[in-house]
Image 1: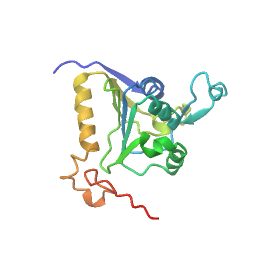
Image 2: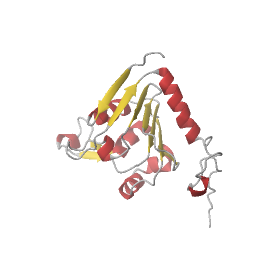
Image 3: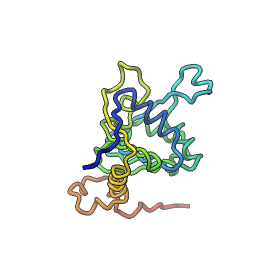
Image 4: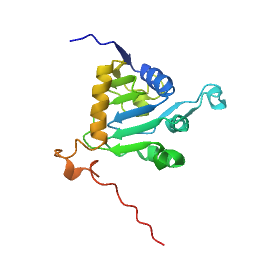
Length: 194
């Protein structure tokens, strides 16, 4: 078996490596898989008044900047996102209208972030403030994961992600009866009335 270059990250390093580093610098794509999705507050951008005041902003502010740069943002998740997450998403209209592509599969339990097809995170952290956020040391979860740029791992995991995202894993699934809308089902029709 070939050796793979991996970096172990723990706790606060999730924020520094994944949010402030890789995601903030994304140029092409950010694919996220998370069992749980909750409101996630991050440090305000450097040079901003909010940062000078040690303020935190919703991760949607970062997603908006990425969307404006043409970065594809996908979120594959299992559970219904928290109420505060959904409310904040409504305030970011461009993201709510498709700038943040979201798909739900109750079998998703993997935690993955792939950035630009060049960096892969696999670990324990969900897309939550306690998991990936900038929360204080005594409010964060204890998390661990690996980060790699290994092409074989990237290809394998992005392929797995794409199979779930596109619904190719749906036909044999034994949870179809409880799935809110199988990913391989036709898109919901929009009905307009006058």
